[in-house]
Image (cartoon, rainbow, N blue to C red; front, side):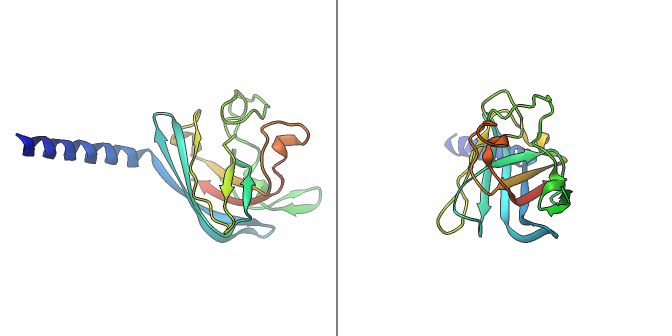
Length: 175
């Protein structure tokens, strides 16, 4: 009886693990440059949970500190022209905002769905601390990109637009 319970529990765990992998993606992240995607700096695993999408970074060679982190509307990490200058990562478009709210209210507000919690990078340039996006699922990321910005994000358009995160420094696409 005890052995049958252990086998049953093992099969149940294997079944749950297999189901979880179906709702999981791994996004390769590259530095954003004026010439297009640059050096690979790791990846971000995204998986569905009962509480939303969990983003688990395994990144390196990034500037230390808090960084704005968003889902952008296009699956392109290349540069685009802005006022006569090729701007890294601009081809990714704006923050993912399917409801056309036009509001930057953070991952727990009713604004852009693309607003994610800030990404923390340690003193050695590594980021491994997961963040949770309660209003997103893995399926929402298809055809989009994940963008890491130079500075933090205050989830407001004051005093600077889009949380003041600054330049786009790293990006990965979800095809």
